[in-house]
Image 1: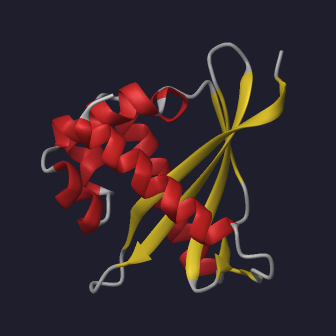
Image 2 (image 1 turned 180 degrees about the horizontal axis):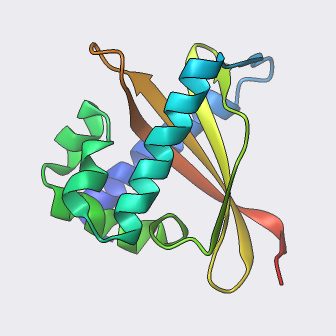
Image 3 (image 1 turned 120 degrees about the vertical axis):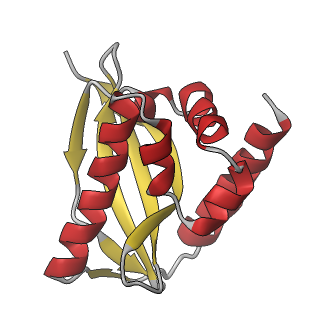
Length: 147
């Protein structure tokens, strides 16, 4: 694992702990326009990964992520190596996005090539131009297998 991958993994672990360790975290539904926009950003990035379009995939990352990786190619390599189910999911099912402690979270069930189930929780940030960008993605293996 490269220094950048280790740093990003540590960043994601810390973010996941902050978001999911709070015992009284209260989730609220996301309004229609924001829900559609959040899903569209995640779908667009997944589409860019499927097309091996590093520049387009990188464009959906929040400024903090773009700064962390510096180039689209380094970002794409991290995703290929560290998040193969996000890079090439066999199937994708979107959950309803929720606000948790002021953060918009978009859950996505993914299936890998061997039928393994995964849950990806995307953290999105609203930008000054009112668009949404992906500020992190925590991926955990789920119980079960699709056949």
